[in-house]
Length: 447
Ligand SMILES: Cc1ncc(COP(=O)(O)O)c(C=O)c1O
Image (cartoon, rainbow, N blue to C red; front, side, top):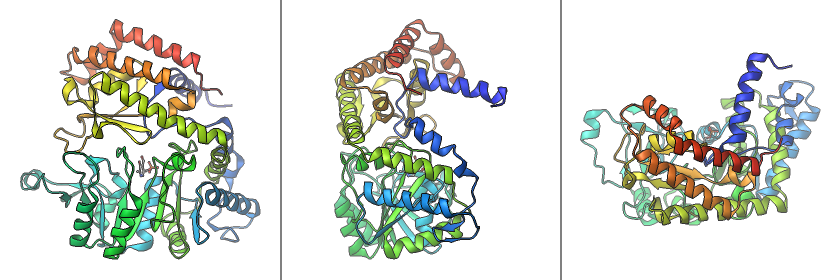
């Protein structure tokens, strides 16, 4: 039996998840079977090493489990014959670190996407002191970082970052090629948390080849859409591909690395003994279950609906005067520039949360505000699509978002805590919250 104190918190979280709409692009709800697998007795076992070569005895069934998981990755993601997979990374950031550790030496140069333009911390991030910032050329297409090394990747490697085009906010591949020729990185990375348009993996692979760099495609956000065959895949194109298993793929928190045979062998050593001890076998069991689920027609339809829902949400918000970065989306996520709405990302997300719509603030390309109250708001459709939302419900969601933002723009925001109180007690927002709860009841999460 769960301890009552723990059970109380769990019940609150259960009610929160069941009675609010999750529009966080990086989240999703797993099936009961995935949770059963994660919480199973597989978690008891230490299995440092790989199938057939473990440090501890008693791994005959764990070997079967890991082989099954790897074979499913190969099937679902259509790995070429000469590619392999590692299902042991404890998280997406660790998966990326394992790739760097496998193919780079300390001090080597990485060319990754600028974080405020939608990259990811695990691709390296550092910022400058006041003086450094004053001397920074903000119009440069390349960001060289600063002395404040926020992420370990920037501490150990020389990370330089490409920005998106200032007028389209899209990756400018010609510029990327120029930067790669000029910088001669050892590794080029694509992918991120808020780049909502397709990436030309072939073009980046050509650029990497031209400058003799490795190419890592991080598809943490897109993995489920690739598994569902509704987005292009970089597998077989990049040298290595990493992804988390808990976003569009609808599995447990974890990650997978795929790479061609020569590189996957280095990556295996990089994970264990390089970075980690024993893998989380409960998680590997959950990943296995989610891959079985992803290998179905139902999941392919689900993936297609995620995209349709994101497009409808984008269109409806645009019709209501919201300014979408890149004008729309190719994926499951949209990024709103709130500059024309007299409310920043932080306050917008607080107000929406008060109405039962859970989102996150986000920086936008060429951000002029602080990352703790940026101009952007990121929305995603994987979780509401898991609930069964279709176009009709997405239109309602857009209508409620629009209303909440309008109401919240009028609320005094001189203090975060006071704003939180004011929006939570606002009668119009409370009425919307009730409508959201009704929608949640109509489209329940299931067990
Ligand atoms: C593109 C990308 N890479 C890596 C990660 C890191 O994953 P984790 O949170 O599991 O470390 C994320 C997480 O949001 C991501 O969006």
